[in-house]
Picture 1 (spheres, one colour):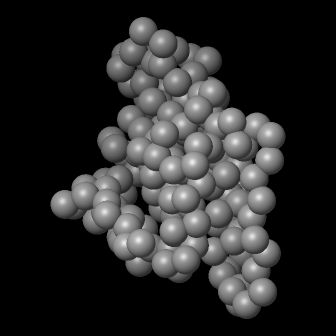
Picture 2 (cartoon, rainbow, N blue to C red):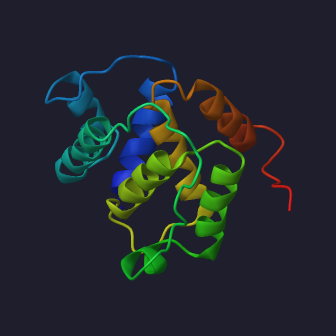
Picture 3 (cartoon, rainbow, N blue to C red):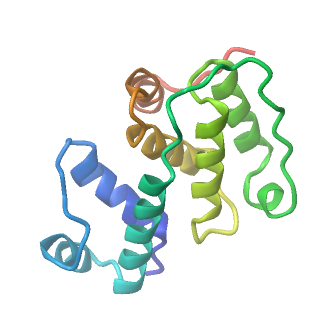
Length: 157
């Protein structure tokens, strides 16, 4: 079975991060558990690298939203993030769930996944993981979590 970085990340998120556990991302019991769960060492290492890059890129505290630039997608971003994904990111910004720095971090982490295309559900997980990692984003995280696991996502047009 071909596993992706996103599969490993979702496993980690659902089994450790979601429950506020604090796993050590290293060659130890967690690494062995992931191997036993069926993930390859290469995918596990790539997922840990993805998480390390996420932690290293935490945006500073939210800045003023006045005069934020409009995001123009280009080249590989257009290929990986379809119109639904880009619309979803715009919706999250307009609702104040993501600021420009967080949006850029979401795009960076989405582009770092080993998938040619992401659907909106995959992107929601990336956004959730980014928000989980952001100090001060607890309300935004809770809102998105409710949308994902509640009655469903139905953006107002």
